[in-house]
Image 1 (cartoon, rainbow, N blue to C red):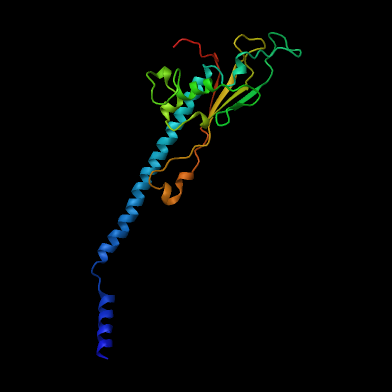
Image 2 (image 1 turned 30 degrees about the horizontal axis):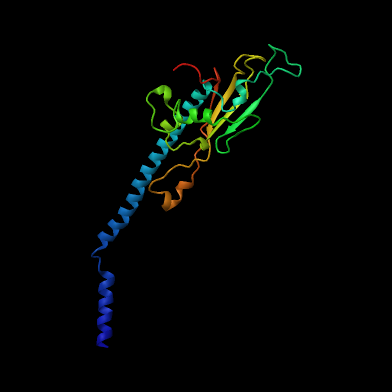
Length: 214
């Protein structure tokens, strides 16, 4: 009986004891605050990656308009034949060049031309640009590789059959197979699987030649 009484008193005191409660509450709130702070940092980094990807695509489209086409047959495409005479409208065409498969629909894939867009003029690596003229897509967004880039050349109603230097296409550069990189919440909540949008940019082609002087 005495022992039972002691246990009852101890249990009553234990239930009514509030010492250490603040420490428990502080620990819970600290965990919540850390997750919140790290989450904010991760989402700010995601916005940075978004902005860098957009700028990289804009730069890639600009380089593509004044560089040799990834679909190398466009450099010599005259459009002549089958009743099409010099000066007639250029027949419609579309070339979609995928860096992941190293192919162009209906054309010949040039890895050299795609590398110029991704790495910059005269470069085969990221981060070695010495001037804006030699800056490539991956100098702006280092995670980019040729496999992440799709370049589309499409008839836009400009130019004419038999035009020297080939047609004047509309060029669209977009991204593929890229995820946002989360540093703190990736493993905790699976945010690393969020795919990055294509970030498409379209510009009208110009010279379609890499032989222009710097």
